[in-house]
Image (cartoon, rainbow over all chains, first blue to last red; front, side):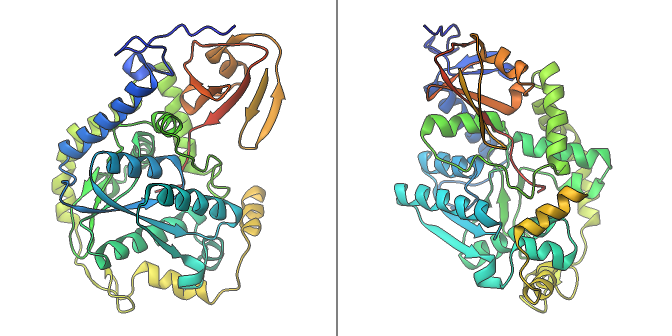
Length: 321
Length: 66
């Protein structure tokens, strides 16, 4: 016989999750309610968007992006999905399957871009061809193509599934190196400017443990396995360090990040405004850039002419390092 | 109890009932970075796990650099 000792803080039904940062337990129904309310508060506090806006959600097949898409639709927003095929072996094949099944089961519009089919390269090849860290080549491709799809599709904002843990880890890394420019731009919403679309992160008040629980409760099937290339990267090391702090001091991650937004970001705003360089148009694709040719076009030029690199080669290289 | 672990995917058999939090401590896994699913249902940290249960330890941490 199994015991079920803890009870939901709201309704006293058997709890399914304990959240030490809230010093409370929640049942399935009220965990979903908590997530929805925290997302709504983020959208309202930072004036991200309104129900009249058309949103483009960047979906990867992971828990956060599928959860935010689900929560936005449930809340009545108009949101289409954009999936980017990264060419990371079986991981990408699996991820794409989760996204397509999610969209099809809910009758949602999904736009798909495939790096290999549409641009002649994939992330493993780009990493070798440009000698970039794979996550850097991946991030550059995502940012550029999400921006372009939003502008060309007439969307009012790009929405990503970055959660509290993601943002706290980025903040931790930028603070360790006192990257003032990056710190100044680390906001839950970046307004449309200089040819870039508005970018919003509605999940910044929610942890990844809460998002994983949300998906389980809502029956959202997502790719649980970690990206094989990202495994062991510096970002994940920061998350591990912050989780150890959180274990000793529940609520520390939220305090670190949300107090940064409330207390530090306003102080950095002046610096960020003065540091903004002149932005022109890329000679290759017309995207906004501070140079003659944007970083994405330079990456495509090097990567699309390079022999295709299997993901196993990149993994072997990382293991040997 | 049968315990399914991920990254890499594997299965281990453990004897003796214990709480969710105790299981995570025994496996040296972070409570903040995992959920426990008992016989297909999400359970909180103080829930009791018994020998006949099938347990999934689901990691929740994801993401490359942003």
